[in-house]
Image (cartoon, rainbow, N blue to C red; front, top):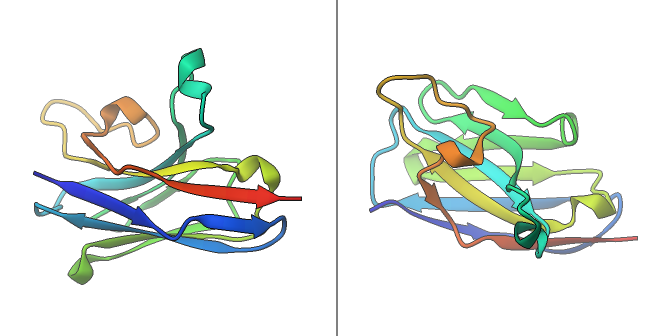
Length: 133
């Protein structure tokens, strides 16, 4: 069973930086996509899906970013250590959210939609990121 654990969240002032890590265990991740999503607490009660932030493919290292974080966030991985990182710079108050690590296995009959939370099979518990003015 795949297990994901996030770390590195915290409180930072606007304009500052923070790095998140996701430790993956319990499987081999060849063909997987690893992603970061975020959600403001309470939004799930309004039916809001988790917001896609960034993703990286485990084998080829292809990276994807949402428009809101492109140029400020960088996703990377360490295959040997089964780690995925999210470096966040120039943080803004509206980056405040719980950040979740997610893993999606290859889909047999179609392409994986890396931006779609419903395509992900495994989730971490999340880590809070708070950006103050």
